[in-house]
Length: 428
Image (cartoon, rainbow, N blue to C red; front, side, top):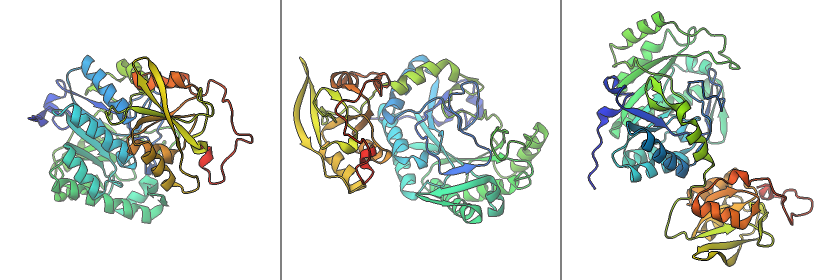
């Protein structure tokens, strides 16, 4: 297969084409690993354009499905990116899975990511380079930890939360290493630097100088947008004179991006002619559609059910899974498989994923974040719903909206007492 990607068609990195080619941001990364003092990630605010805002979250298969719909309506889209609404590498499985699906389906599409750099470890840099993610934006607001500590309320690395200077030093170390690693891998790097008067405005030029030394390609000094209900809500937005002066000074070190539109995490369309509102209905519809990853090696669907009629068990309470398949005459239960014993945490969910290795999805009334993450990573789509098994199977195999089924029917045969199973797994 011959892959021809015209990198000049990236409107964020080439101002000359901003009116000719567009981009779409796919909101597949809800979790964030830092808390910025200027950020308040509100959802369902379609008229507000700022980073961290989206109307919904997509799974990787839903993102691919949405991408197909977007390109049908707007063929001028040349770039697909992930910019949150959290951080792509606080959601590495969702991010990388989406990038893989896009590259396989659209070999000529420009792929890009926007990250704070904390979770962008060397192994992820290697993988995105192999996938063909050509452009990465890293937000670096200071290179002095004393200034950085003023910008972030906390930094979370895996399950440990850091505050103050210790968190700032960790973040800066990761950010600088990320920029170095990206350039070593041949990735084009843009630096976003949010200008906050009284916090880092006197320091922005130093950030540009240091990023130039590391080999960054483009610098984007962005005026902070004062957001309600944040510690920085009363800081005045930098005026045009301040921004023009800073960009001119930074330009002695790096080319400047002057046409940024502070995009939403679900932005779509041309820069300056955003179509997020136009595509809002399509985005919401795609987020409700069950889009399992197609695989000839996964012909079945697993179901957590007491009696074989309703989906009416929590995943953690299921002692066995019913295995169903689609036939020419309808749906047929193939067998029952005994679930692994509870009490082993992550190991148990890996065993469940192995048990369901030939299933494209599993239906249960509820399940926790850990099993969802592990099952998704192993190619099993986790589906939460209540109601008739047949309706769930129809939606999974043919594509449908299970939100109408979730929680709207009584759960039959529930365990009395209905609580946890001691290890917490029964809570889903």
